[in-house]
Structures are given as structure tokens and as C-alpha cells.
Amino acid sequence: MSEMHTMNPDRFSELADAFGGELSRWPSDEQARAQAFLSAEPELAQALLDEAAALDALLDLDVTAPPAPALYETIAASGIRRAFAPPRWAGIAAAIALMCGAGTGWLGAQMNTPTNHDALYANAFSVLSETETLFEDGS
Amino acid sequence: MSRPVLKVIDGSPRRTGGGEEARAADARLAEGVAQGDAGAIRALTQRCLPRVHGVASRLLGDRDEADDVAQETFVKVWRKIALYDPDKARLETWVTRIAMNACYDRLRKKRESQISEDAPEQMDGAASAESRLTGEDALSRVRLAVAELPERQKLALQLCHFQDHTNIEAAQIMEVSVEALESLLARARRALKAKLAADRDELIADAAGLHGSGKEI
Picture 1 (cartoon, rainbow over the protein chains, first blue to last red):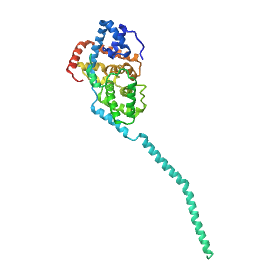
Picture 2 (cartoon, each protein chain N blue to C red):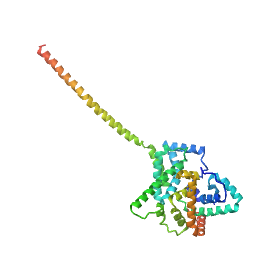
Picture 3 (cartoon, each protein chain N blue to C red):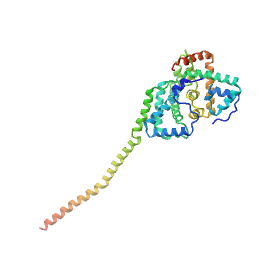
Picture 4 (cartoon, helix red, strand yellow):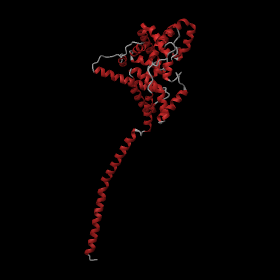
């Protein structure tokens, strides 16, 4: 926030130099005092305002052209598209989940397969040996 | 003195200080944009694009580049809208600051590439584009004088004179104190007065003619 200034010819001139010839465009906290100064010293104050207004009029020649209507459409469409697109992290999360799944599967296979295989192998031969024994006995 | 051209182009009324109602409206709009509401996205674009484009045109001096910066700015806005804090700044102040930073980035890159190519150093990137103007008519002379101002003075003028931001809003966008803003504005206007003083009467007559004929600039 600006510091409080006393309104005098110097301050009035500074404000006109910076903000131009329309009091309504001056800082809101100084407008009332500027208006009071204008009423008290109309000749001096009005001369300062007129000089600033002359420059305002020249500057108003150089207003930039507004953006093309197509640019509004392009920009709004980019925002709407983005709103309906899946978030960027969704793809990364899917990739991580896939990798975790594949890794867990592979680890599981590494840990379980030999044990099951050994058990099946042993079981198969144990049945065979029992059959052979029974046959040798002649029963 | 009335300024009809600005009102038509800018489309938004001059604000007199914000307040709780404006803060709440900004918060609602930002929330709508964050939730992907198409109406809110269109409303924000409608409200802020003229300011963003105006700042970019003024700083870069090139309409195509201003279009690019506007698109770049809004991509950032869509991405960062959840970070907007209505207690700290008005929505257009926040958006305009993003645009200002995008313009400064471009101007810095231009300067770096000019230096690396051993081209003659210029005071202002935008001035090069504007210097092509011949200065034959009032508009060209004024435009050239404004384009040749240092960047920060030009931005202060754009925000306060051409876009009707209050001194507090403009200072927030530029991240300077209100006193520094006032100083930038005063220096800009004094420089312009000095440059245009010689032909002032003729220029004012031309300006009156242009305004009187309703010619769109």
C-alpha cells in the first residue's frame, strides 16, 4: 500500500505525470484529496490535467488490436480437452502396475516351480516302486 | 476525456478494489476450471485472454508471437489452476503475471541468441519489430515511441493506461511496490512527452481525426 501523501501542487503534478489526465484513473486512496485540490486550485490543477490528457489522447491511438475470435476457441478447446483427458499419472501408474504384476509372477514362478516339480517327480516314482513290489510278491 | 476504443476492445469494466464478492467469484470460477467445467473454462478465457494478448503484443511487438504466448499461458493456467489462491490476487492478475513471465522468457532468449550471434545489442526486443514502422503517420509515430520504451516502463503503461488495472493490481502483476510502479509510469510518460513534443499539435489533430472517424486501430 502506498504511503499517505499530502496533496499539493507537486504531488498533483506527480500523479498527473504518472496516471494521466483523468482523476478516475488515479490511485483510489488519493482521488478525494486530488478532487479537493482541483476545487481549491482550479486553474493550476486543470492546466496539469489538460497537459496529461493531451498525452493520453496520443497514447489512445496505439491501442493493441484484440485477439482473433479463433484464438478464443483454440484456447478454450485446449482447456476442455485437457479436462477430459486421463491424467498424466494414469499412464505411469498403469505401466508400474504391469511391471509389478509381471515381476511378482516371475518371482513366484522362480520360488514355487522347483518345489512342486520335485514333489510330483518323487510322487510319480514312489507309486511305480509300490506297483513293482506288489508284482514281485506275486499278488 | 473519454476512451471509447479501450472499453470496446477490453470488454471488462474497471474494478474499484475487489472485495469479498469478487474474491468469492474468482474462487468459484477457478474451482469450475479445476473441475473441467466447460462453461468456466470458456468464461476464464473470455475474461483473461484480452489482457494476456494485450500484454504480449505490447512487450513482444509481434501479433503472431502474442498468439503463441497466449496459448502457452493458458496451458499453464489449466495445469496450475489448483494452485491459484483468491486471497492473494484477482484471477486476471494471476493469469497476467503468468503471461508476463512467458514474455520475459521469450525476450531473454531473444537477447541471448542475439548476443551469441554477435548481433548489435538492442535495448528492447520489441523495438526491432516496431522499428520497421516508418513513422509517417500519427499512429506509427506514437507506436514507435511506445515500442522504444524500456520493457518495464512499457509494461507499466500497458497495465495502467491501456488495460485500466489499478495501481495496486499492476504493482502485484509486476511484483514491485506501488511507489516503484508510479515511478515507472512517470518515467514512461515523460519520455513519451519528450519524444512526441515536437509534433504534439499535429499529432493531436491527427488523433482527433482518427477518433472522430471511428477508425478501428
